[in-house]
Each structure stands twice: as C-alpha cells, then as structure tokens.
Image 1 (cartoon, rainbow, N blue to C red):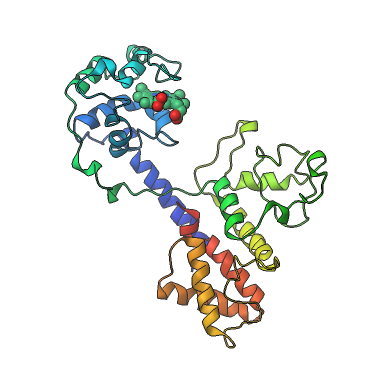
Image 2 (cartoon, helix red, strand yellow):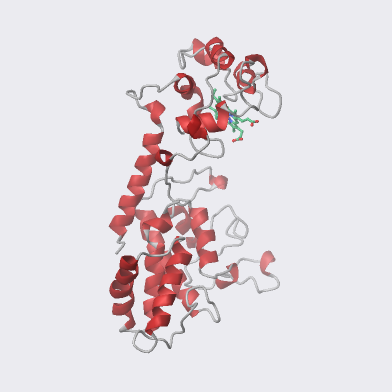
Length: 334
Ligand code: HEC
C-alpha cells in the first residue's frame, strides 16, 4: 500500500525527471541536430524563465520545436527579418514583449560571454530552417513527464473531489462575513493560500494556521514574494497526511454528500452488502485517481485498508480508504 516513503520516492522521481529534461545544464548533453544546436546555444539566455510555466520552450527539444521553432508567429522559415524571435533578440519586436530576455539586450549577453551563439547564426539557421521532424505529428512517449501537484491544485482538487465547499470550513453563511474576521469552523484543518480571497490577511482568516499549512504544502505567496516549492519534502508530506485525514472525515460526515459514499451507506458492511462495498471502493479509486484500479490494487485496498478499519466502524473504514487514495503517488503527481 502507498506509504509516505513511496510517496516521497515518487516525488523524488518526479523531480529527477524534471532535471533530466533540463538538458542544457548538462555538459555532456550533445546536440542532436541543427535545431538542438540553436536551442542549446540560446538556452543560457532563455531557460531561466522558459523551462517551466506557460511558455516552456526550453524544457526539451520537443518543447522547443513544438512551441517556438515551428510556430510561424515566432519563426518564419526562410525569413529571419520577419521572425519575431530575431526581432526579440534585437529588441524591436512588436507587441508587449519587444525584447528577450526582457531587460537585457541579447547583444550584451554575447559581449560578456554569457552566450556564444550570435544573432547572425540564428538568422542563418532560420534562412535554412530544417523541415519539421515527423514526430511533431504524433505524441512522443519519451517526453512523458510528471510533476507534483501544486498546493493550489491540491486544495481546489480536493475540495471538489470530496464534495466540500468553503462553507464546510469557514462561516460564509454569516451575512456579514466579508466585513469581519473570518470565523474558522474550529478544528477542521482549513488550508488556504495567504494571497487568495477570502483570506488576504488575518482580517479574513482568523486562524493563521490555515495559511501556514498551505505554505507547508509547498504553496507560494505573492504578497510575501515567496515562490512555490516545486519539490515534495517531508513537511509537504506531513501536511498532506493530516489534510487527507481531516478532510475525508468532513466528507464522510457531511450530510447527503455522495462524494465518498456513493454506492454505500454507513449501514452497509462487507458481510451485509459486499457488492456495494466493492463497487464503492472501485468508484472512489476512479474518482480520486482518474483511472480504475487493477484487480490486485482493489484487493489490496480492500484487505489492507478497508477491512481492518471496518472492524472498528464503516465510517472509519471509508475515511481510511479516502485518505489512502489522496496519499497515492497518482494523486500527488500530474
Ligand atoms: C527574465 C525572464 C525571461 C527570460 C530570461 C526570457 N524570457 Fe521570454 N518571456 C518572458 C516572459 C515573462 C514572457 C511573457 C509571458 C509569457 O507569455 O509567459 C516571455 C515571452 C516569450 C515569448 C512569447 C512572446 C509572445 O508574445 O508570444 C517568446 C517567443 C520568448 N519569450 C522567447 C524568449 C527567448 C528566445 C529568450 C532567450 C533569448 C527568452 N524568451 C528569455 C520572460 C523571459
């Protein structure tokens, strides 16, 4: 079954996959063709901002080709002067971003030895642009990459999957809630970003631990200029364990919430209604992890998590199954 250790291992693998993809930092990473030569040549000037995010051109050769080289908005084959990439390097591109990198002319980076690839070389490459590789048409399994969910994704996804809303944690039903300090429904393990509304300051979130837990999950905070943590360390693991348990309790105890108890009630036991228990177990697995369990996984979950807890109560059994799925590597990664 998925222990904290296996989660951490998955997260370490995820981090590794990200570093391996970032080849330009790696000295023995020889270019695999003309496009790759240009990618590696530009990388020192660009990858700082374009390895992740919404324009990850420098994450891999495929990303470079799909996102930049064969997008005619940026590179017009045979026509460097009208290619936005060249205009950006020269600092005279139309639009909101006339120069890349912003704030430092590319020419200066050449002058100080930060890059060696010249704009002339980039132009020559565009004049003679290689045809797109065939694999642009198909997806490339080698490019498969995982990352951990961000803290924001964890909070939003989990509320949705467990059928919970803000009201389950804070008193939004109070007609005057926007004008006074938030009353956190005590002990519900609320987790909330410090820079989201509701919760911009202590004004709204009267329990500062809500924000501290979010920080521990690896969340950033733009108000404090703190970046999100892309790794998955012990404090994130520990917070997720607590959060998964507390929130599954809320979900199971919430009246007429079918998120966890879809095909069973707490009166159904493995001896009274085995089919319903099995069906619910599989449905919950699918809901939380986005794919049906194999028979072996369903059996393991049933025998190692559900059954031992059912001996105490069906309520505990479903809370345990729910929390286990949230700590599954498939849940934590994307
Ligand atoms: C200091 C950070 C930074 C560096 C370094 C940087 N960029 Fe950017 N780049 C940005 C930002 C910010 C944007 C605009 C926001 C976005 O779309 O992600 C952007 C956007 C772009 C775009 C899309 C523009 C558009 O209008 O669609 C291209 C192409 C681009 N950069 C190429 C490069 C290249 C090539 C380099 C290296 C020579 C580079 N960038 C270096 C931050 C950077």
